[in-house]
Length: 254
Image 1: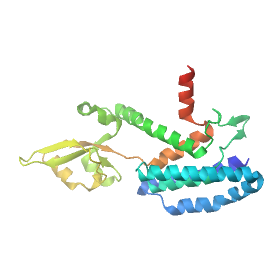
Image 2: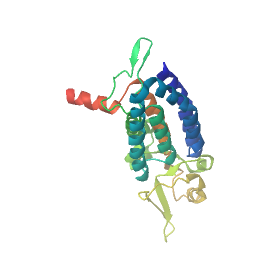
Image 3: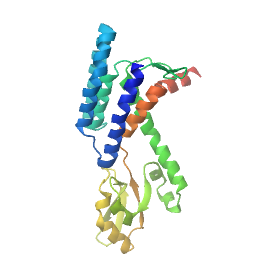
């Protein structure tokens, strides 16, 4: 029962983190401070009921996850808000949550060999992030236009939208850089050195369209926050378990 309560307690914080990350591209530290402070009730309860074995698991989970997440953060794998959220999860869930609901034992795929729940959340989040390009590709198929064939690989990482609509949209990145050469023509190239996420602050693009130098539709990418993947990873870890381990295990077994 305690595991279900912890899961229900955690979800609003993760969902709010997704909301603010989508809207502002950041998650306030207050979200994780409130989550840890109020969630400490569960930690204290489990320290008293679980005793020394639980304390050992709590220390092990916190230390290992903190070191791993810190290294990944320094490597630029994700933002500070994502890192802090994962660390708080490692404190609230030092043991993998196993519970009975409607006659079924969760996670449905069983416990992974490494019982660090936060690692499973991160693994599932990474897997979901990898699958996002497929979703983007199918979205583009539903909104297909012949111009997409000029850059078919873009269909996996972005979509086409009208230049004049950019002023009403935030947090979009340009997949291509547009430069005016000495002959008055516009050259475009893939933004290899980093996407420009100020697509709505490019008034020169409208001028290029008006002069017929570029098409009215250009490639942009939404740059989805990793907090969405973490939340999805949390849900899938709770319900199913370690998706990557299960997939690899079945491949080896077959």
